Image (cartoon, rainbow, N blue to C red; front, top):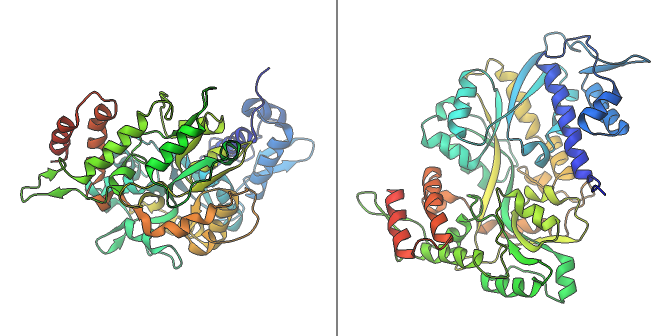
Length: 458
């Protein structure tokens, strides 16, 4: 019998329907006065129930993008306010669910009916070049950008395309400084997450094991993972080790940073940095603990965790949104540590096209998404952590049930680090990644990899 789709799947389908209809209306693909397909046809197209379709259409009615005509159907309405403008929001596709972007844009349209937002999905590859082309072509006015891609933009000299902005009061200061170039803020943080450990509480209880705490080392994790693994194919620990949002953790925890001589040549051999990379290699090659799974991206770790194939994963608050419908109890803990209790910090920010023809409207959208109402909505309806401290630290009951240790991130703020803290830019991290695949696969010896890393970083 086919497996019944989860509520998460329905939520994604509903998001897709609303986003697609909104984009077709705002872009003009659907003209004013044109009727939408029937609710039955939309249900078949997006594999949704009639109630789900109606829920999505009600959002578009609230946004004044469509109007219901009794006994006829739904048709595209004319702009509610004279002089309405359209702006284009470029976004990472992951943001749609991780930040509940559909809900935020719906609320924005209600608050500012004269501004219509057209969404544009952005590519993940060659982002710095792509976003420059999108800005040059007037295809985005506002866009999401993570810290790594921001570094690529700055390192490649494309920062002049970014509009300087004033950071709002009340954001976590450590987030704002990461998007500052010289004396200007070229992007403003929207949401963030440290890399953390997520674990299946039921598995720990079944084995009578104590849950992870801030005193865990990687040796403690390995020992516990061995006890959690069983003969039915369940493994103790997993993460997508080729991800540039995961493996740099081991460099950070080494307690060292890359040193350069007078000629700019880096030193890797014989440093603590190699100790961190060695620990990563040993973990992913631990027989019976770490599955030999041909993962394609970070999300595969959450998929295995959701299927209870693994008991612990290295993940982020962003990615917890992928397991919100887990049929078991789970929680989060600080990452185990090597020499220093440190973890990688990830952040998604909002940038503006400096040459936008709709700067006032674009700035209004940015101010709204970073304001208290939108940030609180993000906190109440996702696992992602808002950049506004007051919203992030709100205590109450939202639509999403957070794990009991959700506020744990507040206690480990001193451990947050960026890859730039180990004196590596985005290009160098990518260069290391290409070389380290050989080392982690045990196809190259350590001394050979050391020399190749020093050459790649020069």
